Length: 152
Image (cartoon, rainbow, N blue to C red; front, side, top):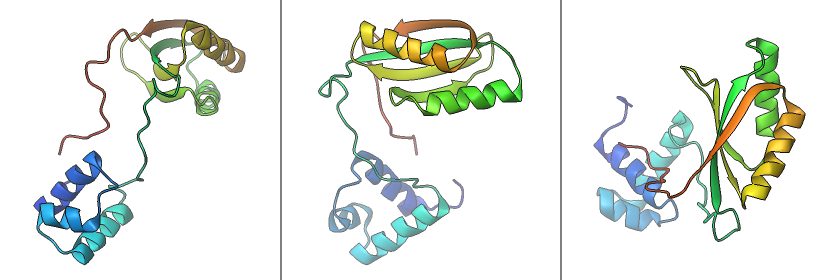
């Protein structure tokens, strides 16, 4: 991040909050013309700092009101198992994130489902695709903070 200046940082902050704002309004906030903003955004995209621009959806409004954290202990610790596990989690749309962890836990999966019965369907799908030593889940009772914004 050392190769971006204050204006790039401001542009990134603004786009994290609202990527749909006009170049004119973005320029007003950061003190640049529309064209200068467009050039900087294109450069940030080309550098990979902006991966893509998306719409953030309301999961509850779409019937996916239950967040679940799934803790997994691997059946084996080898490259083939990891490859199969990665392939399996990428094919299940309810899984929003899958992470290899340090400590006692091998993998953490974050998923959105409609309810506990829907989680059970997801669980059945997961154990059908990959052999695991142990699987446990925790359900989110209350979201105190849920953001996609990175601290800049």
